[in-house]
Length: 117
Image (cartoon, rainbow, N blue to C red; front, side, top):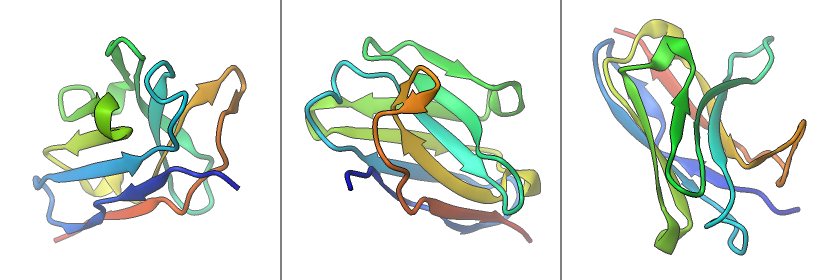
């Protein structure tokens, strides 16, 4: 089983910031589009942000202006900078490389982000 490894989650107050990291399996990292996703228990996993191999980014509306996805190809790592966090951002966050309707890798354990005062 080959999985990305997410880290950086934790408990933060509303308005706070966190930076998530995704250590990705190598080989295709530099050319693949990578994404961050999040899942609340009982709900489906939702896309949060994407970044192409060339660094083009795309965000879902509810995180635009607050989250920033970036990548370091030399380190095979994708980041998600999350600012002005809201309680509704509470979820388990995952990373993966989308491939059509599926993904290149198995899902990892994710990293839990809890936004609460």
